[in-house]
Image (cartoon, rainbow, N blue to C red; front, side):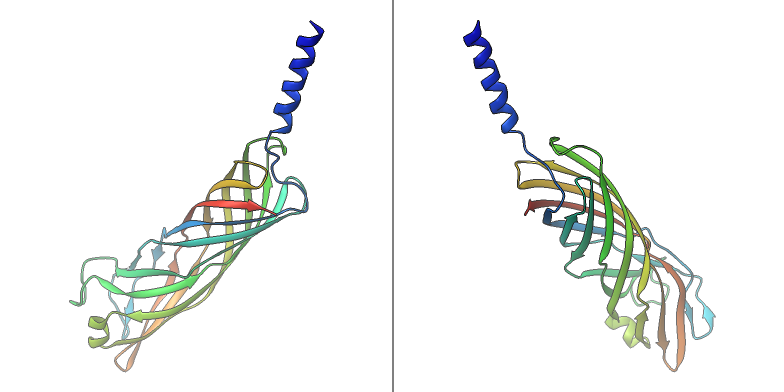
Length: 224
């Protein structure tokens, strides 16, 4: 009996020591994977040469390499910086081909670095590590350009303002061992901007563009 009890204790001890220890204070995690930005846009109508075209904009989704790094302030709190390779979005007219130049209006490129404070619900012995976070985003918008057909129609000098807004996210780390984990997350980011451009010698504008994307990430992470 004593031998059996001793054997059981040894087995339990070995099992406990093999449990993956999740994130702890002072650790740094680095993640890389696929990130999709899916705009949930709402825009005002296009003003061209003083005329309201009665048409808004539609912005397509794009997937790029997503990167983030996080530092654990405590066992349950980390500060995370989201980065990525630049996202390039097709910008379309809200209805089919109002100018006779094709439905695609142009393209814009942006980078949306986002700083987030995350709270982890479970203790360090749990394999599943769900978390919730909130933070702030600064979106750099650049390389705005019309399609060739729209340039030939007299549109030029497209420009969109950069944006500052709030963000929120839900995520989950699934611990594979003490260092490696798989991560999935969904974010909502408040991105508001406006556009200006030339129509021949006149000016044009879209005075309100609420991009407000959902951002989906599937990544692999490593703990240092």
